[in-house]
Length: 461
Ligand code: UDX
Ligand code: ADP
Image (cartoon, rainbow, N blue to C red; front, side, top):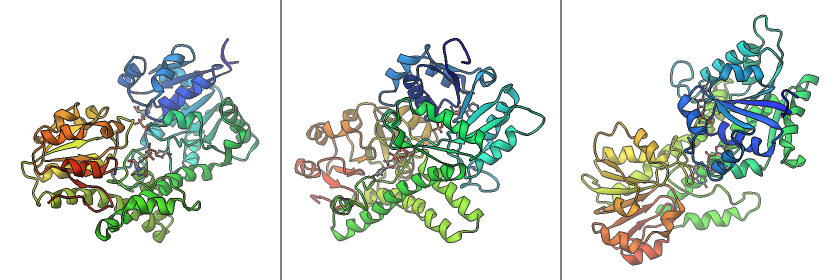
């Protein structure tokens, strides 16, 4: 026992999209462990300690409120918390490096290294350090070298425990995971550390869902899982383009191939391209790794997944431009959805950023609406001097609009009164359903010219 009431002290460094929700679930499921989440950002920690959490995730707030102040704590006292911890999860950001060697592809490891040094400087007892952030393969080695450098007699055991949860379903993914992966060294101390982490997950995860591997397989599996998921999206998006010119229907094709149990039906929805903080970054990281080992054909294969995604966003813009008589100058477009996916306010690498910037380049007037992402959207488009407004109410956003670009499939957009919307718009009225989210036939019958993804347009023109 490290204190009177708790079996162990868990610390998580980094109170972001991964650290915050993951630790909240661990605190809820393991009331006998003290869980502290620290961050360098006072603003983030203040938000975690307030009623307005820094991130929106269904089910998160209730769980934070039920554990906060009991066994879940948010703090900026990083050094003291490191000293007190038995297990330290490292969950700081690992963005793509934008300078020097590997720029645009490799992971920028500066935050990880700073964290490792801080752990080393403030540890007076042995600790288990868990990589939660996505890291390049063999990063554990670098981490161990930093932690054990100098005259420190403290021993650190490094584990890899990548996070597979997706935003918007993060709590559900964490509470009933497909699997939990733990990579460790095959030494007695490595196995003992792994068992300490397994003990935590065994509070709620069935034994057969806990997988153990060596460190490098665990690190690589995270990159590969995201690369495979993204690859499916790029694959179906290439087929969507083919459907648009052949009058095949991508939804029908997805259904037909997805019923083959070897292919499976998930992640086959065509759209304006994938976004989010992981897919692009992790694939580029994989590409960098392959190039480093001179596996150039392998690197080219994975890089193509990203190029297809870039082209898909551009194709969506071109479809709008072509349908609207090849000019958007002065035309009002209501943008439905800015988050990279529904049920999150996160806009990191959201297709909407690229698409809106391109539409602004074409001199369209944008009225952007989104239930949770408008604050982030404002930051993402802060460079746009004019031509963009952020409006909460979708009915207000469509006032006088020539077209609607649906980029994020929020369920609320299905339930809007499209006759009322049509009446408020300029004619001819266009709708570009980037997610095949709406009832296209019904919209067409109202009078809209409907442009889905991967299907022929329904046009009155
Ligand atoms: C992803 C992984 O799913 C998760 O396991 C990992 O831990 C983090 O990265 P996330 O980025 O939160 O999760 O969202 P995800 O649901 O995977 O969607 C990513 C992007 O792909 C979104 O922009 C989404 O709209 C798009 N997508 C997804 C499609 O375009 N079509 C699909 O069929 C599925
Ligand atoms: P992720 O999606 O991987 O969780 P985020 O950017 O949402 O990424 O969160 C990462 C968090 O890590 C941020 O809140 C950031 O302030 C924090 N962070 C970065 N570097 C450090 C550090 N050296 N010590 C503590 N926190 C850090």
